[in-house]
Image 1 (spheres, rainbow, N blue to C red):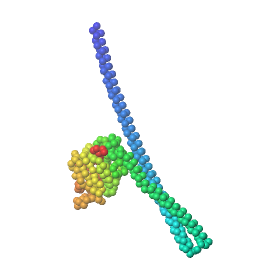
Image 2 (cartoon, rainbow, N blue to C red):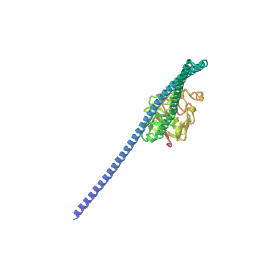
Image 3 (cartoon, rainbow, N blue to C red):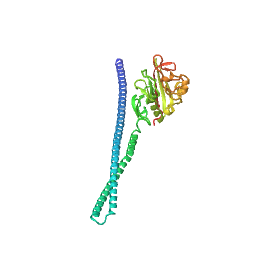
Image 4 (spheres, rainbow, N blue to C red):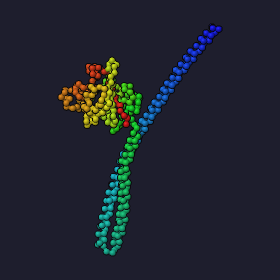
Length: 376
């Protein structure tokens, strides 16, 4: 009997263990199913977002094509209308000449009538006079019709600017929701198209790896062969390639940072793989008339870039006179907001003899990124 009880107890314990294992396995399976469902939902959302972006880009491109086509049609119509006006003017001049001639003829006939009595010749002259008066009336009618036609053509030309203004307003309305930064793209790193106030559409590099989603890269050094020894005009327009070294361009950066408040994030990667970061709560540059002066807020690194705050951008062919007095020829070979010859210049040479440094740390990668503090 005791042996039977022991066997039953053992079997019951084994049953409980199997039941617990089955429950744990079911729990793990449920978690896996939930994770898969979550991933499926994320994929669907990303696909929907990508599809909507493609629709927006297609719509904008079609609208721009329509505006270009309408402008071409408008120019052709204006040229045609101007040609018609010129033709009408020439016709009017001819008609006016004919009227003048007829009036002169009538005057001569009237003068002649003063010397003629009641004779057959007088009757003939009267008939000619009536004939000329009929022709004169017909010419006046034609002239009035031409004047009305010219008025209609001028009215069409007058309405053209209103039509063009309407097209521009429609385009502006369609661009209200168009991205003005990398924030709408979230974690989607890569090249995207945005619109800045007072500027046309242009491509930018968005990055979500260095500091999180929504950051726009304005400068990048990744050890490429791009020379940063450029003149003022090149720095103004921008240069380089998004998949290597590049500088976005002073004019684009100015228009971006003037439309809303931006913060700045600078990411450094040393040769040994160590990373360093500097972040400032405000970043803006002025327009070209003010030499693209730097305006930098508070940050976690008071040295370095902070020393360039409120200084103008300088290149070898356009810079303040005080830099000449400091003998900064070598530093000026790369554009920067130079304070002195020894300032923190992230556009400095990157070669075998002179490597880019973060203070005393040699670097293999540098990125300057901006992101709106609040999206407008």
